[in-house]
Structure formats: structure tokens, C-alpha cells
Image (cartoon, rainbow, N blue to C red; front, side, top):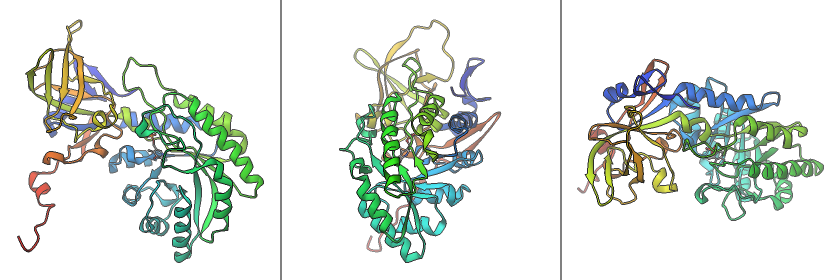
Length: 421
Ligand SMILES: *Cc1c(COP(=O)(O)O)cnc(C)c1O
């Protein structure tokens, strides 16, 4: 459920008509709903009620300071995957003890940054990383709390580019080697082993892969405890999928996911962490764009928008589907026609949808891409020297620009000219 609904014939974000935001900031722009972000975070938090837990929002999904502040205010921790994200989380007021550091290639500088600034735990993904972290921590005279990310070799049944829990993926250590890796970790002077981490992929639409992974984590917990490790925290990753179309079958709900966690891991008495990103932010954001031209093609027309693949790369990168809806509600029963929906960038890959059935649209009309809140703005670029598009946050009847569109001068002046030119 989200808070982007038609009211009086116009698509609204909560209580604000999108046309009003378009007039104020220009198109294209991202628009997020505070009520939806709040609702989704609380669904996870409540799903783990009764178990000691922390929901660490995977901020790589959408990392604007205003979004982080909104979630931090609800008690969210953060899952970060770079030094930059760590600094962003801190700048948004998230204390170090609520930040977990994930990622397969943490540098020593990033480790130092987090150890000096304060960190809840590192989710370590390899033996070389483990040794490096121990050295960095020891050189600072501190001990780094760690979990080891295990790769449970389960098929997450999701798009290949976002599956992370099979043995051929680069993530984590094979679960079969966990015992040896934990033994080495326990012997390293700069580390304190506190738990186990697992994250098997993104946009999972079934619970079964989670069940398989979590059962393996439960078994591993008992095994490692028997070997003398004090396993007291389980980080279960993120990955619960969202409905990208309103017709397709609904992915599991956070309540069902919470029940699965209780069932597979509840008896172990561990503190539970989860790291949802997409489900918190995905349906809490849309991308609003204007039709520049309607160009006649053979068999179908091209809807040329002012948004492009540099603003929303998911269709080009993951063959992702986004529902596209007109901002002005179509009259009931209006006949739909097929459009190829494209952007202005000089690449054939700059195609959002082919043969998409839409009500007739004309130049100057606004459309909204639904479910664009996660892995949208954060993956955007300035390819073709197209300015990063603004982000807007709505809260009831209020809205605010939370990232402004840069001017051309601002973009150009980021370059510097060497002396010899
Ligand atoms: C990307 C990522 C997540 C979030 O995944 P979602 O599908 O957005 O919920 C969580 N944990 C780790 C380690 C990740 O890399």
C-alpha cells in the first residue's frame, strides 16, 4: 500500500497534487511519501515485536538525508556499504551503535572511519577482509565487533544481477567453511565475534529461499556455539520484494516474514537484525516526468519523455518493469494504445517500456513511474550532461525539495582545467 492515489481526477502524493509539485520544481523529479516510508518501516518493526531486534534500513536503496532522518526518527538503524554511506548516516543523526557496515570490499580507510566514529558491527565477507580489519582495529587500540557473512548456497529465485546467496556469487564465505573461518576470527586480536550475517538477494517474491537460508543459519548457530563462540546476534539481511505491478501476485508481507524468522530462529534467543531497503523505500517513491513529444512509429507510437535512463536505470539494467500512469486520471473506459516509452538519451537502451498500453497522451502531459523510490535516485547519473533530478519529500499537505536540481554552471564548474590548457 502506498499514498499515491487519484483524488479529484489528479494523482496525489498524500495530500499534495503532483501537478502542483511539477509547477514548483519542474520535471522530471522524484517524489517520496513520508506516510509510506513510515508505514513500511513500522511493518518490519512490528513484525519482530517480542524479539530483541533492530531494523537497519539498507540505505543504498534511497539515501537522501531527509529520508534517513525520517526513518532514524522512527528508531531505524542503518545498513551501510561504503564510507560515504557511513558519513551520510552519521550526518542524518544516526549514532554509530545503530550502524552496521556491510559490503564485500571495505577498504582500510573505511574501516578506520567507522571504528573511530563508532559502529555497531562489521559484517565481514572474507578472510582477507577479516585479517585487515583486525589489523586496523589493533592499530587503533580497539576491538571490532563482527559477524561473518555466510553464503548459504540457496537460490533466491530473483534476477541474476541481484541474487547474492548462491556459491557462484561474490558475497560471503561458503557456509561449509564457516567453522574454520570463525575459529580464525576468534583468534585474531582485533576482532570480537558476536554473530552471523546472511543476505541472499533482493526482490525476493517467495519466503521459501529465506526459510532455507535461515534454517542453515539456525544450524550454524548451534554448531558455532558448540565450538565455543558466543553467537548472540543474527543479521538476516534484506531482500523482501515489492509488487511492481498491481496485477502480479503479491510478495509475502513483512508480518509473514517476521513469523518465519520467529519460527526458524526464535528459539535461539539471539538479537535479530534485518536490513530491508527496497520494501521500505520502493513504493514510497515515484518519478514524475513530462511528455516532450509523441512520435509516430511503425505499429506503435513513441512516447518521448523528459526522464531518461540516467534518471531511472532499472529498466535498462534489470529489465525492470515500472507501472506508468498519467498524472491526470484517465476517463473511465478510455481506449488504451500501445506506446514505446523512451527517454532522450542517445542509447537504444534508454527505453522504459515497449508496447505499453496507456491512455492517449499528448505533449506537455505528466506521467508517473510507480515504485521508483528504491534504487532510483541513488543510481542516477549525469550522463548526457543531464542534471541530477530533484528529490521532493511530501508530508501530509506539505512538500519540500530535499535535493535541488543543479544548474548547468554548477555541473560544468565541477570540472577543473589543467594549467597547460
Ligand atoms: C542491498 C542489500 C540489502 C537491501 O536489500 P533490499 O532488497 O533492498 O531489501 C540488505 N543487505 C545487504 C548486505 C545488501 O547488500
